[in-house]
Length: 313
Image 1 (cartoon, rainbow, N blue to C red):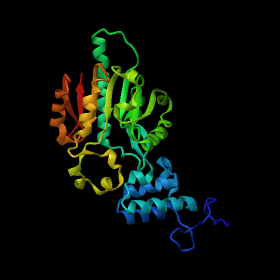
Image 2 (image 1 turned 30 degrees about the horizontal axis):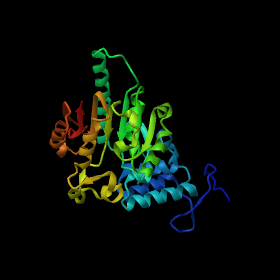
Image 3 (image 1 turned 135 degrees about the vertical axis):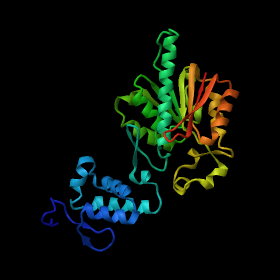
Image 4 (image 1 turned 45 degrees about the vertical axis):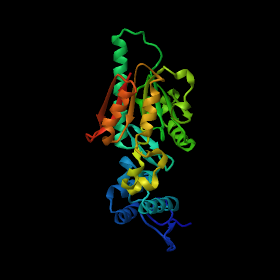
């Protein structure tokens, strides 16, 4: 194929819009994406992903000629986003704290609210460590953290990466979700050696030897009630896995299941950190006290909304 002059060695691509052979640059496609999406930030993300030009290379790459493979990828992503698919799924990856996670329709999209839950979990780990030191307890094994319903692995892998002495178990009853978590596990370096993935519903995925040995249980469980589904944003209701969103008629069913069983798995002292909806705060605290926890509170997220139940034994 003849390479046009000034194309930096790139060949013209067959126009995926069906108009024969055309030559264009990423700058032209960026303008098209902006016009079709009405969002400069989303247009840039799609061009970054399709072109491979990110960071300092992005602006210098905009005038490069687009070849056929990247052009087809761009068209596919742009079309999917226009049809309402969440940008995170379209891109196939999304940032969460220090991680860049693979995400697709098999798992929930990682959100800032859950980043705040990780902050609370890490704070509880520090509190537990200080409590043991004040009791002059001999340092035993590494702290054990269990992430129930791990999905993409966002919580489990963040804890393992940011609390380097922890041993983390990540469970999910969805084999497809665990496949995503396993792919993300490969991208966290040495921290991956301290993470175990297990298939099963909540605590049933764990080996019995962990009973009484878990320092912290953390989870972003389903907490949407059936009656709340019509109020969900269309992007969420249509695209994200329903089983990871909807708990049952009231929305509290899975919170009740985890809080009720966790005490049999926790060490003393130990704690549970669960993501909840802000309107569930009062009921969640009452539930924890009813189950025999000695302390319970709800911490806010970055927007100031009550988000993370903390229950301690």
